[in-house]
Length: 568
Image (cartoon, rainbow, N blue to C red; front, side, top):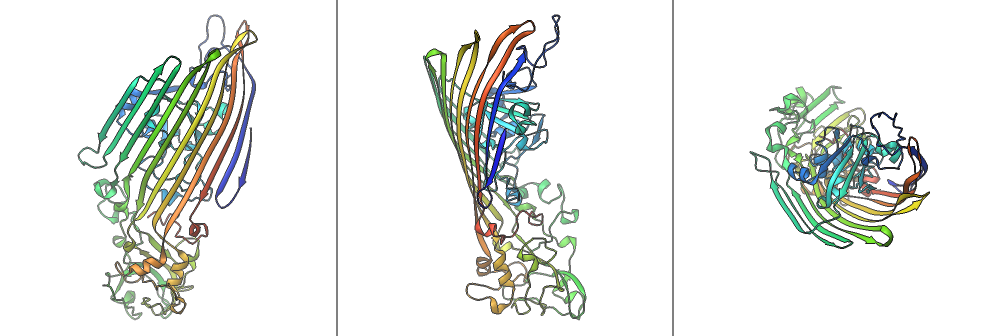
């Protein structure tokens, strides 16, 4: 096994991997975990490709079409995540892609994705196969994850699912340490099969999910054809629609229970008055009407009647803006041909396409500036100039005077993320048998090509360069620059101000897979203890991952949505 990684450009990862399996030998064709017999102990060499581990007497969970239909679930991941061995993974309740996307390692995740995590070892350690062959990793325009998005597999073509509940790294590599999920597709069908289901949250009447699938099959002598189409539409559910999720602490009735944010529409200002050397942690007493400005008097306690000490009950409840079920819409199409060929050979061709449109959102951006903001960019070193027309303090807020300023940009509305993901898959397999060493041998040759393309649009972010300029010396705020008012409370930031500091963030990502594999397995001879079997094979797998963040993000001038502060 060898691997090479090459950095092509900003956040572009292109690993190339190949594997060679030769001469793995086992005594006895009995399955693993076989019991001892009167004739003696059965000897089994595991970790080979002599037999698929999913066909041995291993701890395998089988989920058939009937069981899948009875769940009433429209997502393969939701079904798998209900198995006892599942440790979770992303699903359509995950609403934080903007906060966890764009990590330094490039392995971002995205809302709308659905993954399986066995034993809490992480989704990259659970291998997902389709008909025993690898599937392309996911892409949601938040990075280059190392795991499969199960929403990229058309649900209508699934016949059953096998879950190998023990590690198989000796066979498949480190991405199978936690186990293997093998999704088997239908290869025969007579006539038309159609299904429809509709469901929602009992007693609430929201979060409706619709799923429609139709497939048509033709069975002729030696030829089997199936084509199908599917559509899934899941509506969103807001945290504001449930009492239990109305505040950050489940079941709470106010911010006094904790978890609410210091980024309020009235602002939080932690400063030191250079005239009195008094440290202040204050907020506005109330929002000022458009055109009105707060005043500051250092001779008065807390700076005057317009400012009051900041307290827990003044924190902002960001929770109602979040989704507890994200909206998602998926269209899938697939086709499969199984053709018998002369000399006992069989050709299998499969093609599929899935389009996903999904979204997630968070509360309006909490703009935090100053040394204690922890942004890691220009916003930590900002100077709010004394001559800024909206600065009520009359002195520069900068080194020695500014600790932290937070202001919730409610005028911009919620931070909203929309993903559009297209997944293509083409697979060809040629299988047959031959005679070798006087014994029958099975062989197969497989080619897999898959491509995952994703685009994400994020509204509600700010350009740090423009924020610094809009808060700085008014004489330097020329041209399109508009001075920013973060001191007037809700409603004081005008559309012109937002138009200058804000931008629409556009990210994209892509992953491709090209996999060639050839396998042979059979018996060499019969020995007293059983058959002496062997497996030979070669595999060449080429994966290509690319993540292109928005140029403003790549330059480090966005508000850092991956920070813990921005999560609120």
